[in-house]
Structures are given as C-alpha cells and as structure tokens.
Length: 361
Ligand code: ADP
Ligand code: MG
Image (cartoon, rainbow, N blue to C red; front, side):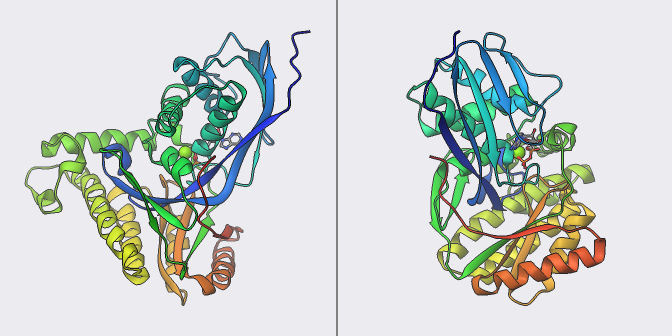
C-alpha cells in the first residue's frame, strides 16, 4: 500500500515579540526581541507518496511528494512546502509526509506565526528524515522558504528569535554580523501583547514596498545599507522627504536597540519603556506602518498606571502591540487595556500577559 507505519513525531516553535528594532533586520541592522510562551506545533508521520497538510481554519492540501511547488490557492501551505523544498536543496532526504498544524499563537498578528510554522515544520521534517544542520542553517532555510514559496522578502529576525530564544532573556541579533546574544530580562518587568484583531497580509505589498523604499533611501544617502548611516547624517540636503523619513525610522531604531541593550543590562525599565514609546511615534510619523487600531492600543496603554512603554510589534500595518510594565501590575493592566479598547471600538481585542520562553527545540 505504500503506507509506512511509524510513531508520529511532533515539533513546536514559539512566536516572538519584537521589543525594539522595527524593520531594521533587512537593512542589516540590529534587533531586540524575545520568544514567547505561545507556539505552533506540527505533528504527523512520513508517507511514501503524498504530502498532506491540515490546519484548523484552513483548507486541507494534498499533493504528490514528487510535485513540490508553490500553491496558487491554499497559500498557507507554501510555508510548509517551501521549508520541505529548501531542506531538500540542502540534501535532507525529504519524501512524502502527512502533517497536522496546531497551536495557540495568534496568526498574522505580528507575532511571527509564519516563522513559528516554518521552524516547527523544519524540526518536524528533520526528525522524520534525520540530517545534520546547524541552527543557523535551519533558520536561513526557513527564511528562504518565505522568500521563494510565499513571496515575502522577510529578514532573518523572526526565525532567529523563534529558534535561539531563551526563557527570561531578550535576544539581541545583529543582522549583518549574525551575532546572537541573550540578555537577562529583569523579572520586575512584564510584557503584555494586545492583538488589534486586524490581520495583515504581508505578501499583499506594504512590507515589500518598505523594503524597496529603504533600499532607495540607502542609495539616496550613498550607503550600502541604512545600517551604515549615522543619525547625524539624516539631515543631509537633497533627499526626498519620504526617503528621509523611512531612513530616519531605521537609523534611529538601530540607535534605540544599542541603547536598550545597555538599559536592559542596567535593569532600567523606565529608560527602556521610553525608547519603546519613541519607536512607536517613529512608526507613526516616519515609517507609516501603524494603523488607527494600533495607535489606540498604544495610547490607551501609555496612560495606564504601571505602564513603562508601548509600541507596535512586528511589521505593523495591523497586528499587535507590546506593552512593557511592572510585572505585578501586568494582569490588571491587560484587563484595563482590553476594556478601554472594546469600549471605544466595539471590538474585543485579544490581550494577554506573555512570558519570555525558550526557543524551538
Ligand atoms: P505573522 O508572521 O506576523 O503571524 P504573516 O503574515 O507573516 O504574519 O504570516 C501569517 C500567515 O502564515 C498566515 O496567513 C498563514 O498563511 C500562515 N500561518 C501561520 N500560522 C498558521 C497556522 N497555524 N496554520 C496555517 N497557516 C498558518
Ligand atoms: Mg511573519
């Protein structure tokens, strides 16, 4: 029958919250994030002939194992098929498999369900079809899957944090040198995620447009990447206003990340929170990747006692915000945030206190 009986295998990968460093990754910059205690898991077993994929809320997909290619409909499957294809390219003997996706990570909210799905797929496939790869090779294969199969030119940040995250630590990632460092996150500080409920479709264009704009901005300033531009050089003459604002966001975000690393090490939550507020303001004015819903969540949070800072997290254009607060105030703040937002909009946002978790394993 061509059916192999084997114990089902399973692998999980967490979502991540971007703490600072917005749209810096593909500009060869620096980022600070953390893996969170919400995951996506892929489980199943191998099959000689077909690849069959199931996820609640999405249409089932079945293709021949020999016909691995991007799907025009059922685009969600491309995250999984893309990883299978990239692993094959690296020599992993991926054949057919049946996989079921589940998890408690909000999808399409800027918490990187895409990278969590890619990584849980990669680890699942590496268990089914054993092969030695370094963790960085796995992260990069997942990123290429997103580029080639999904069409989103995402940076490496999401995959790195979902894989290298460490409980109660922030992850610093230098996207140029590929340095990855974990920094203890003070236990006195809490994080709240608020999902505006408005989903983004990254592939739909805004994300890739920002990528192009920041490349154009680097060219206008005569640097290889915005990483190389100093804050003091932002006021140079003869740069179109839009490109200058895009550059300002990225350059100052990098600067905020470097400062935030120092502040974290010193346990300065107030200073860190202030940088988060500045980051959101820059998203709003310079990068134009916020939305009225995100602005409202941020402004409600910023006025609540015990809150140290708030900003959008991830790509923006919808999705979620992250609020930094004092740990023992977190549950009350989360409740108040949800209440005020729904009173003002009639929409119930998904708000939860999140813990910093270990990366995928
Ligand atoms: P984010 O990564 O911030 O959550 P993206 O737009 O990058 O947002 O990725 C969301 C997309 O990833 C979804 O539209 C879907 O195609 C795919 N995806 C993520 N999680 C799942 C899941 N559990 N089941 C099926 N598809 C998923
Ligand atoms: Mg994503």
